Image 1 (cartoon, one colour):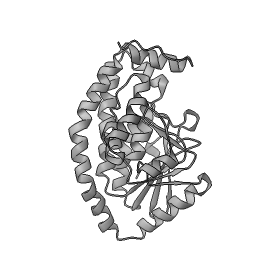
Image 2 (spheres, one colour):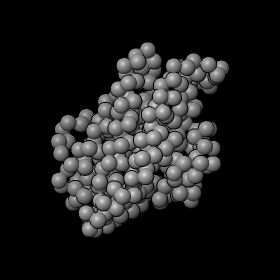
Image 3 (cartoon, helix red, strand yellow):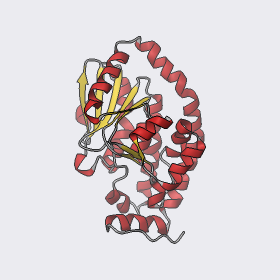
Length: 264
């Protein structure tokens, strides 16, 4: 695997475990065009990496990922071609995770927001620091949860709970997320590395083919569901991205004020 091909992601090996770290810490690992493009490729490369059996995904600094980079979002207001690229990559990120035969463990070290939450929740096993929060606040910036949230949240916590969080963008604490089944484990922040390492080592020492193909089998239904939903979700997100409410929300966040929505 050519680690030098990546600018916004860093890598580390520990035995047969490959740790992938989103590496824009000053921006809370928010997705600009570069990181977004790299995420569309990294699980493909990791799946083909001959020196690993298990993948750990985390974020540098104090966040897992804050979601979309607002400056990048604003720059795409009047650039339809940019959204077409983003839409293609968005699908590739999710399907590359689902297609990756190696188990992917999310190590949620801090906030996982928007796309950051979707990527974490599509991992196979999710550990989070008890100080972390998870949210999909697409609606709060006038957008549809088109990058996977509308697919994965209902599968993990049921439609009633999922719609409550997706329609409000309300954040959920790691402890509550574990209690209701959105994630597997909420652990003390100081114990997160150790807990993830122990679990990753357990998988790495297991029967790798059986583990891989069990993941593949378990993901068949989820892949079918994602294929049936993602195109529609992304299309609705594109429509919402042309709304006055979306522009108002992004400008308000950049200007640090409360948005005034008009429903247009």
